[in-house]
Amino acid sequence: MSDGAVFAKKPELALAQHKFAALNGTAEQQKVAIQKLLEGMKQDKMIGFYNILVAEGVLQQDATLAKELEEASTKELAALDKNIEEAKEEHGDLEHNESSIHRAIFLAQIGEEDKAQAAYEEVLQRPTTTLNQKLDIVFGKLRLALFNYKPQAIQREIERAHELIDKGGDWDRRNRLKAIECIWHCSQRQFKQASDLFIECLSTYASPELMPLSEFVCHGALACAVVMPRSDLKKKVIDAPEVVEVAGHIPSVESLLRSLYDCRYADFFVALANVETDHLDVSRYMYAHRRFYTREMRIRGYAQLLESYLSLTIKSMADSFGVTQEFIDKDLSRFIAAGRLHCVIDKVGGVVETNRPDTKNAQYQTTIKQGDLLLNRIQKLSGIISI
Image 1 (tube, rainbow, N blue to C red):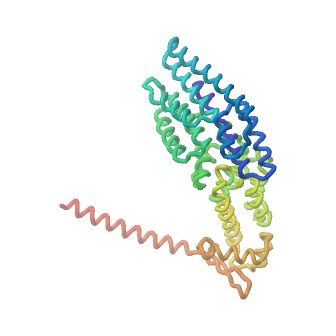
Image 2 (image 1 turned 90 degrees about the horizontal axis):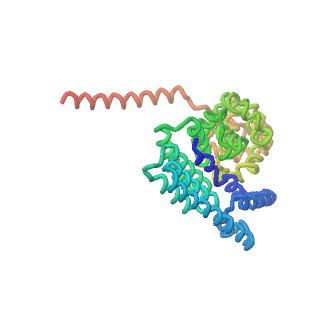
Image 3 (image 1 turned 60 degrees about the horizontal axis):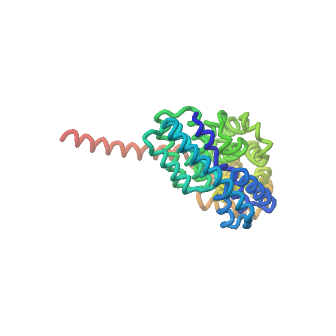
């Protein structure tokens, strides 16, 4: 791997997460996040990022800090410019390109997004840039787009990375891209795709520059909880060594998965509320989908309980979930009306009756429709051939 891939761990994506927590977290979370932001900015000379935080009201103006960051970043840029000139005059194209990539990465590191993107693109378009250098550049641009959360740019760079990897990318870069795509799909509410990628790269996860393993497991496990069959959830997620290893760091997520699998629905509802507070409300990737997620998980819990019975009383169902009968009645009514739960409520008898769809009949009707479509196409094709 080239040196560029090492340096492309900047900007620190954790700082973008801290910025999000400073804006959306609890008072305690905000306090911790602001402290982390100040430490990170000083360490990485992030004058551009500092100016953004002040403009958005995350931090108060501090002339002394601004001057310190400005001087440190200017000095570093001067040194990088000197390296580029020396590489151009005394070394070959490979070294010249590497020096230019380092400068682009530093611009990304300090928060100068537009300048960094332009610098990356300039090196990318050079005829002397190697395939590995192009991959490093695209990963750098992708990282920058993730840091500033620019969805169109993220999608574009993911497609670019796929094109380059197909031309000869190594296993490490393929694995890193899968991890990035997993988190990207989570942010786009595409939980099925996210869960598939999570299972693929969980055992070989080696992208701490994206996020720590515990955070990656948190996002991936939450995606799996929505879409994965109960048996697979146990085998592929709950009992996975990597998940067990970090379970202590994400207790509410572990509780959510285990209580759902064990059919402990009262604990499941408590864990779901904790997941929303601890993770969904402060995750820059999941925040926009927090209400959708909790709704889908409630539906999953209700459906799992109803699968075991032809009917059960509203009282027993309310007791199972640790909520009031009024809550269950209102919640079920919404999901039944939306066609998400296959049951009816007998208000007079205080009973919920399941009416499972006739899957065999549905499959038969689908087969008939597809058969008719196939026959029509064959008739059209035979007419064309005979002509």
